[in-house]
Image (cartoon, rainbow, N blue to C red; front, side, top):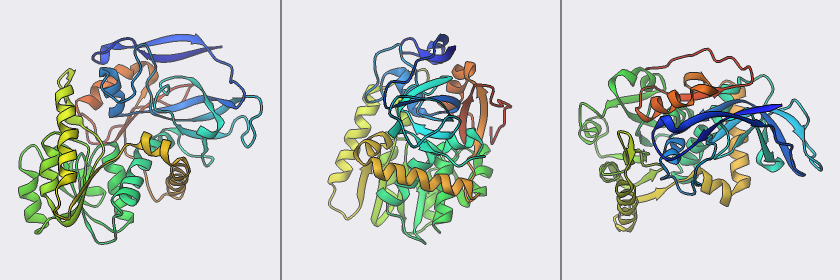
Amino acid sequence: MTNKHIVITRKGGPEVLELIEGEVREPEPGQVRVRIQATGVAFADVLMRYGVYPGTPKPPFTPGYDIAGTIDKLGAGVTGFEVGQPVVALTVRGGYAEFICLPADELVAAPAGLDPAESASIVLNYVTAYQLLHRFAEAKRGERVLVHGAAGGVGTALLQLGQLAGLEMYGTASKAKHPVVADAGAAPIDYRAESFRERLAELAPGGVDVVFDGVGGANFWHSYRSLRAGGRLVAYGVQAAIHGSRASIPTLAASMTLLGLLRAIPDGRRARFYSVADEKRKHPDEFRKDLGEVLRLLADGAIRPVIAQRLPLAEASRAHELIENARVAGKIVLVCNGTDAAATTAGV
C-alpha cells in the first residue's frame, strides 16, 4: 500500500512542493496510523517552506499543521481507540499526506458525522482563536476587540468565537472580504484604502480593549497605539515577513524586537506573543480540553468554519499561492483518500 504525500524539496516558492509516493509505514508501539481525509493549509506552512518558521527542519520534509481522518491501524499497546474511529490532531508537520503515524496521545476523538474538512479547520484555527480569546487576552463580555486579517482562517474563527462571547468586534480585511467579516458580527475596516487607526478612532472612540495581530512589522506598533488604558495586544504571527516570493528575516527579527519593546513600556497596556505549538507543548492538557470544547461547538452547530476552498492533495502548490497572496477568505483545506474535493469559495 502506498502513501502519497507532499514534500518541500528545498526552500523557495510554491513550486518547491512536490507530490511523491512511498510505502505506508507501520505504526510503532504506542502509535496509531491515521488515514487522513483532510489537512489544513496554514500560513505557518508557507513560512516553513521559506525556512523561517521556528523549528523548521532541513528539506526534504512534509508540511501540514492539522489533520482530520480515521484510525487505520493501532500499534501495540494502544488502548482507547478503535479502527475506523474519527480523530483529529495538531501535527505541525506531516499532514500533507494520505497516511500518518502518530503517538496515540497526540490524537483527539472527533464526534461522528462531522465533515472532515470542517474538523481539520477546527484544530489549528479555532483552538488558536479560543486560546487567544480566553487564555491570553482573557476577553470579557462587552469588551471592544480588533481582529487583523479578520477574513482569514484564524480571523473568522476569532470573530465567531468572539460573537459567542458577547464582544464588540472590528475586523480589518480587503473590501471584497467585508461581507465575510460583517456576517460574523464585526464592523469591517478596509486596511488597504484607509488607516485602520483613524477608522477605529471613529468607530470606537477611546480605543479598544484587545487587538489580535498576526501581521507584524509596524502593524504591531499601530495596534498597540489603538489600545485603551489596560488594553492587551496579542500577536500570533508575522505575515509582513513575506514579501512577494521571498521571506524577510530582518522583518521577522524587527517585529519580535518591537514586540519586546512594547512589552517593556510601563503604561498599563500589555503585549504578548502566542504560539499554538508552544502552548500545546507547555500545557498539553489545556490544549486537549480546548480542542474538545471547539469540537463540541462544531458538533452543536454553534460555529461553522469558513472554508474558502477544498483542493486535492496534488494541488498543494496552488493552495500555497492562494494563502500567500491572501486571495481567499477563510481556510483552505487539502482533501485526500477519496474525500469529496468539490471546490467551494468564500469571498475570493
